[in-house]
Image 1 (cartoon, rainbow, N blue to C red):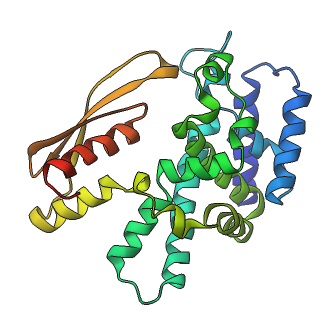
Image 2 (cartoon, rainbow, N blue to C red; image 1 turned 90 degrees about the vertical axis):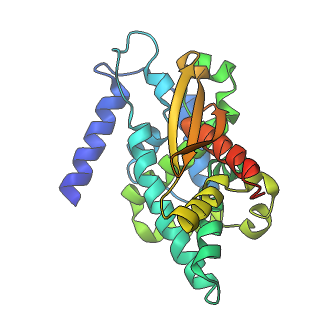
Length: 260
């Protein structure tokens, strides 16, 4: 594990340097120190934290080679899985009398883009993310898709640096605080989960989402998605990310099916 972690840190360092060292940013490093104090975690290797909070747009600017990928999305991938596991365990323990259906609904709301973005705003996480000037001008610091992804990447960084115990403590302290009230808000209704439950119970198959088209520059993409239930086109949706467009399509389908 030690050797694998060292290799991961080496790869992240290479990503951040982009073949030539980037100029030192004392102000950004100072903000990262403030963030560590805020969350009560001091990183042994700050490279992991830097990787989690360096958005792809920052590394795609200037002379960076085309097609270059930052560790941001890879860390988001692992952080999403870790978050799901911790949330499932906490809900299972906290609500011993509840059935699987309600637990699944609560979990899907807590790990949703909207919920994580709200928690990221509470933490002012957008102020710590390094991104391109263009992304900042286009509202990147408050964009739900970026904030939720950064939260998942941060969870990954904490896990790689400090282990599962500290990661669980962070999730319980930051993500689960006041969750019962927040997930009761209508805006957090997970229409994808609602549609999936309907489709599985009626036809024993999940809904099928298809990206019909996408338009706009990378920093301001708009995705158009169709959703099929039992092979029939049931809803259309749009969004600034594929996840958001799928959620919008699911909402449209649920309304047509009179599920909400």
